[in-house]
Length: 285
Ligand code: FDA
Image (cartoon, rainbow, N blue to C red; front, side, top):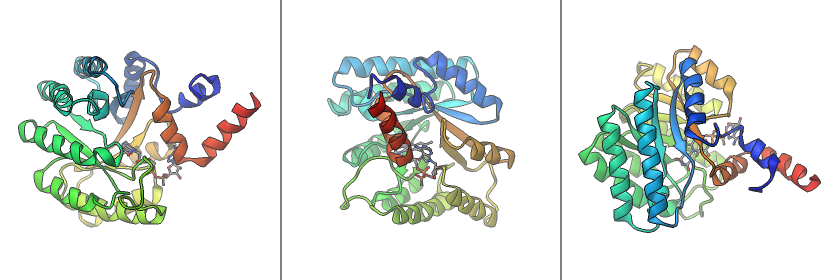
C-alpha cells in the first residue's frame, strides 16, 4: 500500500504535502477563507529517542513559523511521536518544550488522543503541563465509556477539550461499539462541554450533530466565538464553507509530512466506500 502510486494519490486528498512549506501554503489558503488551522506533522509511534527529538525540533520550527508568518494556526501532536512508548519522562520533557514555546509565541498545543492504552497517561500529562502552562489542551473520544468522567474533570480544571468520535479499533469493555451509541454519547458530552467547557472544539463532519450543536448554543445564547467547530482537511468542503458563511468559527486539521500511512488508514476505515475504491484499483493494477 505504501508504495502504491494510487494510494499516495488518494492520501493526497487528506494530506497537504510532504513538507511544512506545503502545510504552510495550505494553511494560508485556508486562512483566506476565514478558517483557522491546526497543523499535524505526521508521524507516530517512534522507536528511538533520536526520532522523538527530531519531531520535537520540527514542531518547534512549526510554532516559530506560525508566529513569524502570522498564520491563524496552532499545532496538534501525538505523544507516541515524542517517545511515550520509550520513556514517559523523555516524552514529557519534549512536549514541555513545545508547550513553553507555544506560550512564548502566543500559540497553543493540542495533544491528540491515540488508542485507549494511552488515555490515562495522556490525561495525566496534559493535567500536569496545564498546571504550569495554559497553552495546552487535549482531545476526548465519545466512543470511550470513561469519557463523561474525563470531560467533567477537564471542565473543572478549565482545560480546553476537542471532542471527536474516536478513530481507533477498541474493545467493547472500553468503547461503545454501535455507531448510534457513539453518536448519542457525542451529543451528551457535547452539551456538557458547550455548557461548562473552556472554549470547546466540536470536531465532526456529522451534519445532524453539528445542527444539534448550533441549536443548543442558540437556545443558551452562547456567543459564536465561545466555541469552535473542527474538521479534517479534505473532508466536507461544502459543510466547511456553509458554517463559516453562517458566522461560526471553524478550524481545519491539516496534516503534512511523509509518514501518511497510519493517518490515511484511519481515514479509509471511516469510509468503507474509500476502501472498496482503493482495493478495486490495487487488484487491477
Ligand atoms: P462520521 O464518521 O459519522 O462521519 C460523518 C460524515 O462525515 C460522513 O457521512 C461523511 O460525509 C464524512 N466523513 C467522515 N469521515 C470521512 C472520511 N474519512 N472520508 C470521507 N468522508 C468522511 N480521532 C481520535 O481518535 N483522536 C484524535 O485526536 C482525533 N482528532 C481529530 C481532530 C479533528 C479536527 C477531527 C475532525 C477528527 C479527529 N479525530 C480524532 C477523528 C474522529 O475521531 C473521527 O474518526 C472522524 O472525525 C470521523 O467521524 P465524524 O465525526 O466525522 O463522523
